[in-house]
Image (cartoon, rainbow, N blue to C red; front, side, top):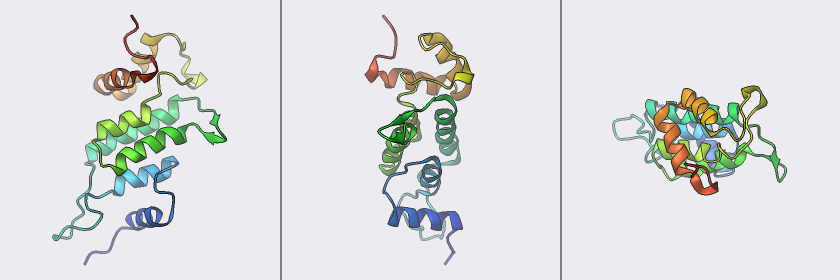
Length: 157
């Protein structure tokens, strides 16, 4: 039998003993990295992970965008990012596609205040969309813009 990597062992311990959903970036990175399809090794001794390297790149780019862009005040005594990470963590536990997990991380990006160093005007939709496109790419930004319209973002008519 193959011995689990130390990161895998830590992830299993967190899932066993800790809060069932990630609450911070470190827990979330471990969750998406080490989540396997069956939570056990296949018969050939290889892990069968839910997310490919490309999926992980998409999810982690979204996580780092969340952390870098949003000026996150405390909500009810907790950092605001915990809500967005918790949403993505739930989607991860449900083994949803990487694009949905990325949307879970960034579903409030257009209605939150952004870090002052980004020098964006909150009401300038084009400026904000352009900046996000430069980081996330057009396809993911468009997905976030149109699929997270619960709070009135999306095409302004």
